View 1 (cartoon, rainbow, N blue to C red):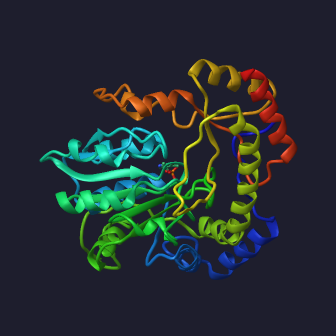
View 2 (spheres, rainbow, N blue to C red):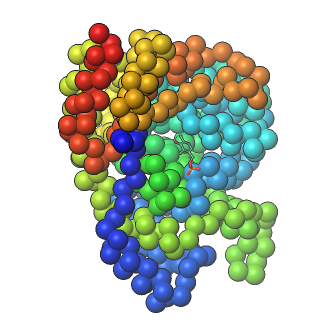
Length: 358
Ligand SMILES: *Cc1c(COP(=O)(O)O)cnc(C)c1O
């Protein structure tokens, strides 16, 4: 069976070395030495000033919303994983959906301003599949209206814009290190703060019960991660560059087969160094997508309708309309994509697609 993704697992001995360190230190959680080491190495690898290693990417979003004191309406994208929307709702704010661009599948920045009201406190948007949002335009709009920006960068680990990490944009960027992501710690996430020291401290306090030692400052939650997850991250981080190179080769092979069929892909801006996080492809209509998804399944090949449905249509929301997002989400399919995927498997996947389309 070929799955849509396959988690990178390091050689077992490498992980065992870290387990021996953990046993030696007798320190398993509460910001032990491996958590510190991982944060340090992530800062160096990504070229960012700070990062807090937390338990997952969803709590990272929730803490970001809380630390920026957001309330009222938050402008967001309908084309993302459901956690982007539910974190807003969980923090008692109202998501206001702005449609996406049909080129990058990220929020259409030209439509943001008309959605801003007196209640808008922030823009929270996703660098979808690792393709950056229009970060410069979004900063301009946020500055003009004095509102905050949070980037859900769960897909954007390693993506660079104009030579620097995409995580350096926004008041806060959040990451997910879930097992299905490009870089993972099994479960885990990160918070990158681009604000002042006060904001950095606030985020830190919120992630660990609101206190430091015996000084109690505020209400916090438990978003700490532990030594075992940090150890997985330390094993995986040195392999990320190789993983990205292998993924790039696979993406180019898919392109070679599929682009001549007239199928649509999100378009990369030439100022972007891409991380090859996913391989989404858009079919001419939903019926064809379903036909191809089923044909692939008959051959034990799993794909994922990522993202479907468009988040503005969730049944617990009041149903705004986002035509582009609704259209793309019905037609987009993520194909199997991981470092170990064989070229011959890519060839057979493409052959099945080609036959189904003809
Ligand atoms: C994976 C993901 C999340 C959630 O991250 P978890 O670590 O699974 O909580 C949030 N947003 C996006 C866009 C994601 O892909």
